[in-house]
Length: 127
Image (cartoon, rainbow, N blue to C red; front, top):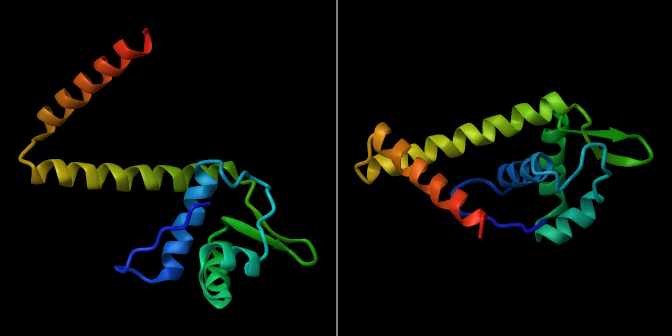
C-alpha cells in the first residue's frame, strides 16, 4: 500500500481510512492476512503504537479480526465491506458536488457534464 498523510487530521484516523480503502478496493482481499503491526508501521513510517491503535479501531468496527496465534485478517463479511464502500462513494460524491457548486455549477449542469464525459469515454473505448 502507498501511505499518504496530511496534516489536517490525526495519523491513526488516516491509517484507518487508508486501510479501509485497501479493503474496499480489493488491495487487501477478504479473509487475507494482514502484515504484523510492526511491519505495517514500518511500511507506513509510523510508530507501532499508532498502527496498533488504528488496527484496534478497525477490529472494533468489524473490518478486521484477530486469530490468537495467527494474526489479523480482513473481514470476509461482504455486506460490511460493501457498506463501507458505499459510504466512501457517498463522501466522494458529496465532495465533488461541493467542489462543483464552488465553481458555480448546479445539479443539472453537473449531470450534463457527466453525461458529456461518459459519451466521450464511450467513444474512446471503440478506438
